[in-house]
Amino acid sequence: MIPFSPPRIDQKIIDEVVAALQSGWITTGPRTKKFEKQIAEYAGVQNALCLNSATAGLEIILRWFGVKEGDEVILPAYTYSATANVVIHCGAKPILVDVNAIDFNISMQRIADAVTPHTKVIIPVDIGGLPCDYDSIMNLAKGSASMFKAENEIQKGLGRILVLCDTAHSIGAFYNGKKVGSDSDASVFSFHAVKNLTTAEGGAVCLNLPAPFSNEKIYQALCIKSLHGQNKDALAKMQKGSWEYDVVEAGYKWNMPDILAAIGLVELERYDSETLPRRKEIFHQYINHFSKNEWAQLPVFKTDNSESSYHLFLLRVKNISEQQRNKIIQLISDKDVSVNVHFKPLPLLSFYKSLGYKMEDYPIAYDNYAREISLPVYFNLSSEQVDFVSKTVIESVEQVLAEK
Image 1 (spheres, rainbow, N blue to C red):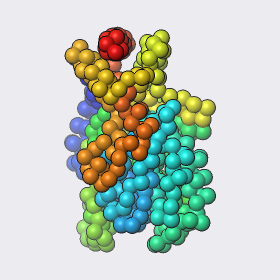
Image 2 (image 1 turned 120 degrees about the vertical axis):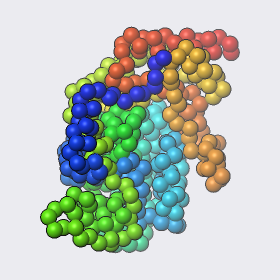
Image 3 (image 1 turned 45 degrees about the horizontal axis):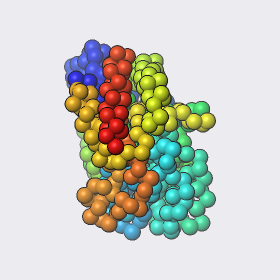
């Protein structure tokens, strides 16, 4: 059985987690703070806040910015539900737009068409680890400033639409020659179990707000918001005589524990030297296999100004239906190879259907989804296994195509 994306849990990870357990700090403490500093340095930003999920990271920024009922947030119809759910949590309206046909990322033209005076935030998503067109999105946000209606002091300070990048897939990706994370107002990484860099569960917000904002002050405010609105965390309260604290707002329970950060510290240390190179090798091995087949539409993982994090190998099969794709997946699974689909577009999900979103309004998103199969990519996947996966997928596709 070849699994889809198991985490790399080896002795180095185990030793660091055990050390965290034995240290006496298992909730947010010195390891989390160290991990935050290293993530900030890696992403090229001044401050990063580690939380218990990327979802929490997206929502905390929306709430900090004051997104509320009556506001609109633009995001792709092709993304995981978390990107839209956080908008719903804030009482705002997700404005779904279609994506590109060449890749899976949000369409610039569709963003431009969707901007209104109610637009407060744009959330582009780096599907599969390929960076979106950040420069164009930032330019659009700045160019729409005259239409922007600020409704609180933070929004007045920015004076335009906030660009909050869902970079859940793209840690280690490159855009304009530098690592993803500092290309918009804020970016949010995911460290979920299946991500390139895992902490089991977790995420990080990279802060890159322009002047007059102080990203350090925003970081401090978000720390409070992420821990019940309490003005001291456990580490600060443990200092001699520093037990007393206050609760200054009705905050949330979104902090990252040290046990999770311990995994992340090991993962980050070897990410560029081991994890990314191996994932890149697997991608190229798949490319060698599938490029020989006319029916294969290969994923875009490198452009003139960007390079993917090699998170998902998003294979598309030309000229097939959703039903044929599903049959191909069944044949592959019957041979003990695990594959996946990323993602069901939001309008196909019952909750978003109930809100009135219709799949026919997003034809490119549907076409991409209906023909897509995600193949296994993970550090311990051997070259022999990649060969077997490729052979299995090719045989399964050709069996279904022969039945047409």
